[in-house]
Each structure stands twice: as C-alpha cells, then as structure tokens.
Image (cartoon, rainbow, N blue to C red; front, side, top):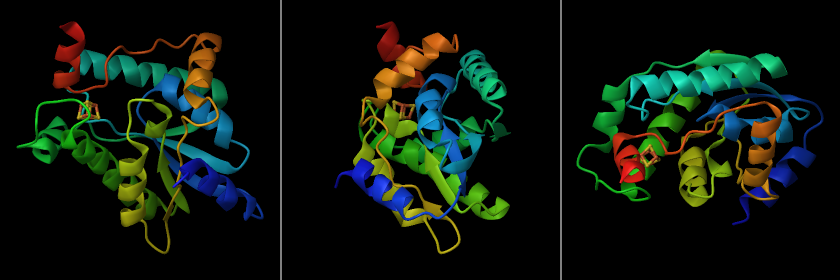
Length: 194
Ligand code: SF4
C-alpha cells in the first residue's frame, strides 16, 4: 500500500482542521512532518521515547524537540521516561536493529500515544517515525490501524515519501537542530560505537 497516497486522499476529504496528537522521536525528524501537516491539523506533539535508555541522550533529544516547538508555537506533552516499560516490551527479542525488537518498540510508543490521544479527545493520532529511511512503514501503519478506534483514528502515513527525510535535514539546518547519530536503545548505541 502507498501510505502517502492514502494520507493525501484522507486529507482531501477534510472540511476543516482536525486535532492530531503526533508522537515524535526527536526534533529533527518532527520538523519535516510538522511542516507537512501544520495547515491540516491542530498539532500537539507527544514526546514519548522510553527506548532512549541513556538519560543524557534522552535529555538532549528532548531539549532539541522543545527548542523547535517553541519556535513553531506548538504544544508538547511529555510522556513518562519509563525505560522499564521498554525493557519489558522487548524482553526476549533478538538484540539486533530492524528485527522484531523494533516492531515491539514501535508498538509500545504507538499504544501510549493512542491511549493519550483518546484520553485527551484528539481526533487523530500518528507518529513521525516513518520519516526515517530506517523505519519500517508497513509495521508502523499496521500497528496504528490495529489500535485505532471510532473516536480516535490513526493517521496513515509514510513521511519519508516526497523527500521527507531530506527536508528534515534541510530544516534541521534552518532551525539549528542537532541530530542524534543512533536510533535510541543501547543496542543501536553500541552498534554505532562499534
Ligand atoms: S533500534 Fe530503534 S526502533 Fe529498534 S528497538 Fe532500538 S530504539 Fe527501538
């Protein structure tokens, strides 16, 4: 399925702005997604990333995120940094990037985003994760569509399409955002260090 085409079809059917709780992994990735969606949705960013086990790294990414959102005038809800929830979600999974471990990592973050969106009365929930060429858009959309309910729908998307990732690099320069050099968990950190 072309998730970008599906998103565009959906957006065309709107007769006004919808509310969206947008899970974000970091400031640089969210920059291009927000630019793409800001005229279509009233966006609130949800920063929920318990997969970033290193506290210093977590704080660094959160600060970059808040810096961008302050510039753009967009609200942010900061989720709990519950690294135990991440460890439980990936327990028994292979210690390898892009394995099923990542599926469970996406699922944890999307489940929390859906619950928060439902609680707070958002019409849509979604995530910036698909902007990265390393993230599996099939998995992200499959998980999101399984979670959605009548009150809060999932925003089907593949933000890497239409040069989304390239745009996030350009916008990171414009907004002076520093980009991290690994995905988030300790395994991805070790792999980068190796
Ligand atoms: S590599 Fe990235 S997506 Fe996969 S488990 Fe680690 S932090 Fe999550």
